[in-house]
Length: 112
Length: 111
Image (cartoon, rainbow over all chains, first blue to last red):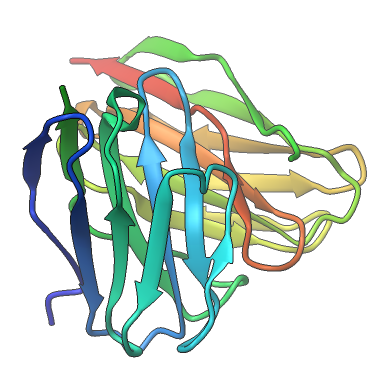
């Protein structure tokens, strides 16, 4: 039982490059989330998927797109990376809003 | 977007001290309040999810209370140990799936 897994763990991009962060969970959770974490700030919600087949914007969605590929997988795409997107990205999953979220190990992204 | 505030930002205590932190959140449209523990180089781990005014939850030496009418929650640690050193996050739901996190309280426990 791996919980929530994320790939890659580290990535360096040049401005304008694109990439996809992958996330998968094996807990049969309905809901999945993408957050970014910047120094001195709390986790900020980028996008979430309440259930398979649905996605919605969070607090800071600009510059990102997501895909809920199936119940297990939720990917985050940066189409044209910018230095402001340098951050640590966390994926999480939960049974629903009244339940705790389980977090992946994070992806540290640097955009130069 | 509602604001979730945590205080203090950081706290240094001696082993054996008891301590507490505060999480403030807008009380309107309250749905749930979460507490997480986040150790360095790891991922946040859930401590409590609280939904009802007056809720009290306990896990070992850690406990939390909730006041939804005035919009605050306290996290208490009794007899702090060095392994309690971590960042403690609170997060608020106002219905739906949007979870707003505070910036956290970083606790350092010296042996």
